[in-house]
Length: 326
Ligand code: XMP
Image (tube, rainbow, N blue to C red; front, side, top):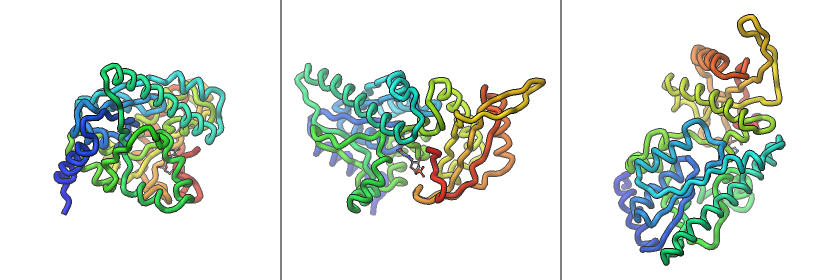
């Protein structure tokens, strides 16, 4: 008979037992799992834990602040931030192909994380300590899925971009291994993590990078971030966060269409809204959002986001469409 309270106490005891007085690091992605795993380990061993946040510049509005300010304030965790926005933009410059984008983002992420790791290790070494453990936010369904043979592991592999390769230098600490997503959220809430982190909908590791159809630039990211923030705010205000599994907001950077604003002609980009309902992201249906909500989102985006003069709704199920556009 598991309650959130005793899951928490039991995990904290186990983590203490595993880690002893060694040092441990944990990568934060901005997502629920890594945040809850880190918060649990922090509760268990305090400042023996150093969290690492590689900011790749592909997060949505407010998400880096959620990690750097809200996560830290609510847990007291020690955080190392690597601001790598320029590195990712440079590496992605001129690239439009989705799989190439994923590979570059995955590769740069690992490099940036390893650099951060080395800096933290050098610091620890100077104090005569050694980092022995790495925290991972593996959930029970991940454990089952990757036990299901090579095929299953391969299909899933692209979903772990933004995570880390198995790092043999470290022993793994996986405090969420026995939990399902809703239990993870409950434990996170119990640990005092903010609702924005605990309730966050799934978001891909490569982030907004795979929601710009075309080349990624700083300007386009800025534009998409604004449109996405408006769409999310209106969805939340309509009380529909729980009805919708995710709502990718996509910038068609390679497409332009003619519009009119005041007395003038515009020639801007379309934004696609892709709200879906789903159980597990393997299949999905497009969400029948209320027309007045769609109208509000459309009006606000075309009025408030320079360079966007059209908002379109994706009404494709999965299959044949995928949830993301890239
Ligand atoms: P698709 O687009 O394949 O998405 O229908 C299914 C789920 O996976 C997420 N997704 C990703 N997550 N790295 C990730 O971490 C990725 O490269 C990636 N591609 C898709 C997507 O947001 C949805 O939840």
